[in-house]
Image 1 (cartoon, rainbow, N blue to C red):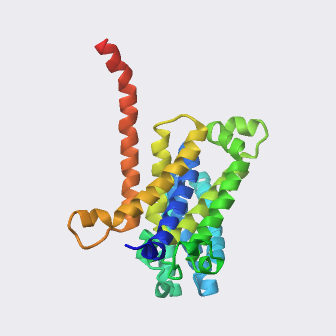
Image 2 (cartoon, helix red, strand yellow; image 1 turned 90 degrees about the vertical axis):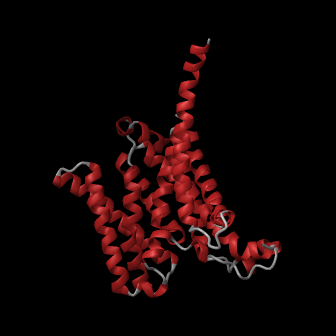
Image 3 (tube, rainbow, N blue to C red; image 1 turned 90 degrees about the horizontal axis):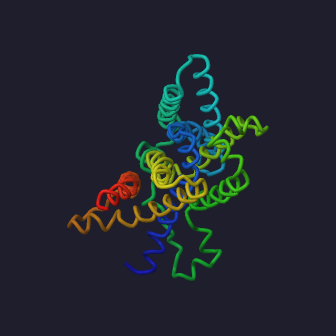
Length: 311
């Protein structure tokens, strides 16, 4: 593969994978720390009807209307989950599961009703994303990376992901201390006057924004995996808040890059003529990362005992 082939065919998808997985890994840490990872699953599915409504209004896959529609759907889902828990007196997991499955089913029906399937918003796109379809045909050489005219033709998913990453990273930095208290001691946070419910709502909307920004490129399955796996793996290895949040983002980005890089070579090494779905490989690596972290944690726990026995 030449440098031009890499720039045109691989770089856009690689950037999208890194941005999407790093962003989900960043926000997933807060969900894992709050023991509310199912909410990430719920929001990543619940945004689908909002995305389709945004498409129906504009008639095109425009980023801003779809993002606003997804945020509206996420807000509605959060409100309904709270309402179901209070009225039906269900535990959090049951209420969350009931709401997000209903929203996802509604989104699938809207795909057919609005004609969204005609612009590739079909079930495969929803579940697995379209990483492999992101290309940058205007790239001529590495100088194109500094050429505004050429950069303008990068896939719009990359611009959306980059913008959302910058905004949400800034919000995390701004709310670093309040989110710390919300995750580890919400009662104390409320007692000292922090608006705990507003912080929860802000966190939910941030997760929703990350989900919809990553949704089209990597699909709902990988969004769910990256909201959980990197953060869960880091949680097994550290009790530090800073290491958890920054490590979750870093591990997510690494998994995104590594998974995309291996999607083609792994089948080729086995003598196969096809390539694997990049989102599937990234998600599988996320599971392996959690398994590896569990093993490393057990080894670290067992090391002092072994030393004591041998001594």
